[in-house]
Length: 116
Image (cartoon, rainbow, N blue to C red):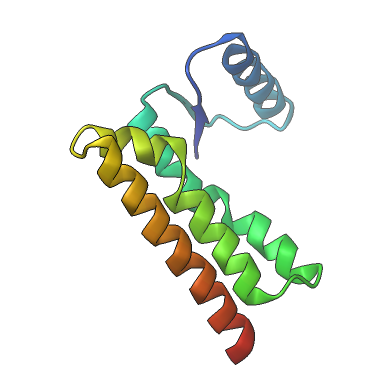
């Protein structure tokens, strides 16, 4: 089992690592604990981390289209995404990208709500 602790290496990250180690020891588990401090790598954790949240939203009665739109926005309109794009795009293009993606996410949320 691999457990990744995402963060910048601050005190809270170190405290989280200690809590994970303590719980793993109490449960007689020996996971490989990795600390991830690279912002580009932490961005991709959003995709898998948001799925349980969306499941709870849908279980609580939030429409599927709204939940999917939220999921796409969390992943596609994040600060780590902007940080990566800043390396290859100008600020103006990043704002245009975020604007177009926002409109498309809202539109797709409405379409899914209508169809489902």
